[in-house]
Image (tube, rainbow, N blue to C red; front, side, top):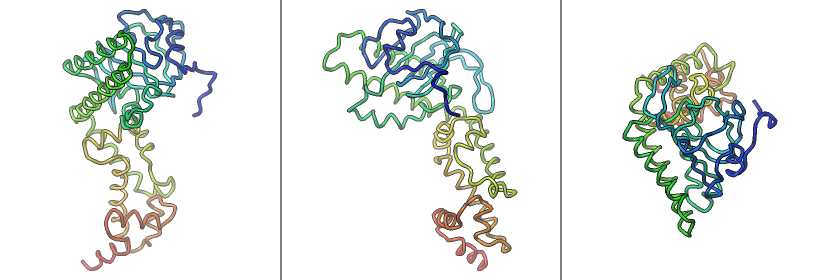
Length: 307
């Protein structure tokens, strides 16, 4: 659904955002760190949607409450991190208790000329949904707190020729640690995630059965993620960590499994098998099948006949 620009406030600079929130001006034009222990955020804009043209990382040091996570709801007590990429919309909360810990804003222009400008695209958690936040152990929370404090000290330091390099390095270190902790989270929440994988396999099996694919086409990673009620990037990153394969690769595995079943049925031509699996063109099916099995559909059928 296309957003109506009249429905939200647009912020191109950090200074404009902080001015709107009646907070102190940023100490650096491209980086701002808000410590909620030191400021009182007015709630005049509570309920309004903000479109931010910069990155946002929120660190809740005493986060508590029930949070939707995958198919269930879980009670997290340790504090956590949530990430927002530029050009995403966030609604301002009316709950005063949520304004605790830190929030770091940095503009993409800060990264210009640095390798991080390109590598930041690899940090998939900037595309995760809010309910897929990173929940931290006590030890992890202490590490993250030290990183935020180091950024705060650097922003307090008089700007010199090293300031820009140091700030970018500190943000990159924060992202490295976040990546590590997300990897840990995928592994330590195996029961939740394996249930998610089981539901994905069940859904894909259904999609490739009963001629569902014939009517709806091939399933996409986005469709599968929506069915499981998680973000596409989160699902793919979780699967890659636990299984070594992306969502698309899992779709292909189920597709090839079903294709072998259908090809074992002499009543169906290869083209009919392709259409039943959701392909618009049999040639595309032939190419994928050969890619995944090292045999063409015809060669696979011949191998079955020779057994």
